[in-house]
Length: 364
Image 1 (cartoon, rainbow, N blue to C red):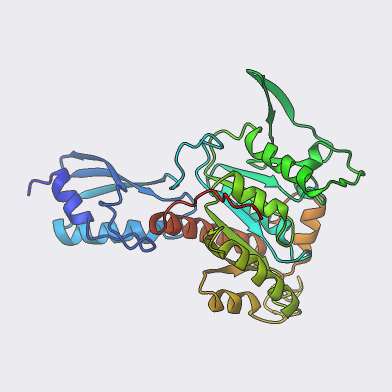
Image 2: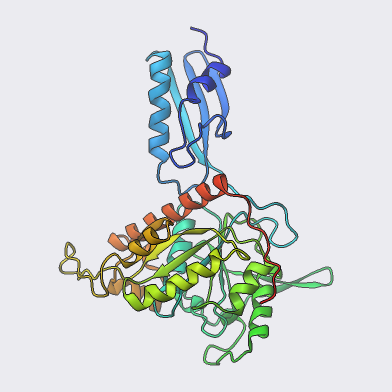
């Protein structure tokens, strides 16, 4: 049988992306077809390097090819990835594919810890990642990345001063903590804090990024409105603990992004501090703050449940030492890597299913 690229694509059009629910060929995911004798090479371009279904897609391709063309062919399938985006080449952050807001209704639920480990996990999975610490009055990113005391370089581009972000563990980052003394309080009114966030977005050399995470302060404030008025946000991740008081505030944060005039897609809910597992009893789970609160919140508002993160002493120790828990092998690392895969998956689904997010132009 004479195999041609056309026949190969016809066969592979039977394989669907499990998340986007469209075939690989129409999505442009089959590239670089080469046929030499009975050897066939091609590349499957996934929507994210953090794709959790990589092996499933590859095996599905091999299954239909063997069914259509028999066992005499040698298939060489390369799995690679190009992160999808619905952002066009806007004047602000033109090379950033996805801008992700990490939000919570109240403080103390581990939002910054989640942001840090999610950013590092995405980088570990092969993505280009940036992180903005938008909590101007309580910056914690420098401590969690062990870069306290470091100051970003500044370079001149034309008439404009551009800040070069600090890079650690494969993540580019910016925080007010790099620009103020460690032991000084940042006592600023809302407009000053909003101005700082706009500068972190527009006056920092972010370059090419697959994901830019924005670690927002607790609640719903000027900072949140400044973000959605400055750049189109791809989606929001809501962090909560299972307890009732945290869920009530998380609901407000979720509702803010869903308001018609803001209209930022909710990528899902993360349940942090979901259960406690002692190191000496790794198979035991103690639900100190209640059970499945985040999961029920996601079900109520019909948004994805992204996963649960346990209370483990090593997570706190990692935050204090500046070496994120996701870099240490064990159950906690697995939880954060799984979270990163699910967030990347939901971003790919969002980009294939929804229109791009528009800038918010209202004044509240």
